[in-house]
Length: 279
Image (tube, rainbow, N blue to C red):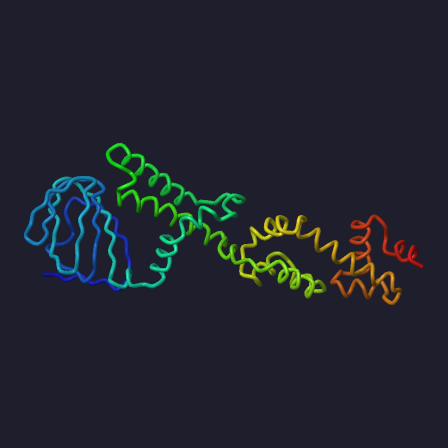
């Protein structure tokens, strides 16, 4: 008897044929076999089970099986080893799903940003909702383990999408004082206070940063940077100890013209006019 071997933790096989390409065989992996279409006989451990489209079979390493195809058959086989379920990353993801439905429901970002599902995930979500609707017509939703896991899978979809959108870590956003301290410390380094950079520094989602800042400081992030820079620049202009060139270099402007343009756009007067008014 042939003994098939698989060393990858998970593989998906999708095949359609009129004559099964194997004889009776065993394997060193587990397998979920879904009959997508067709009919015939599934022989497993000396048992003959008629199959039709929609049937599902479970096969373990201790089993021996074979298919006798009567009507051309399409099979979807999900093959996995012990390693697939012993992988700590999967359990971390599952625990995250199981333990956090309420936290996810209360996550403020989900009220401010629409989740961006890709077409495949959107289809999976639709199918999951259809599954729940279908079960509702035949049984009690609240007591069904099947429905429970269908709903759990929706949270799994949310978590996976949030991860891809870099929307985790938001609830651990730094205290306002730490954020302001960082901004003030790096105000002379434009690249360090770009949204992408500051979000990476605090391990948060760049897509959420501006929303968070405005809600907590009652003004936009760029408006705050501008106001703080103007405050510092005004002090230098008032002191009369700095040239426009020195100020431009200190705050990372390309040149004096760039600095003057920024200042006039922000205050409505040129830096030279402001300096004269303070003498």
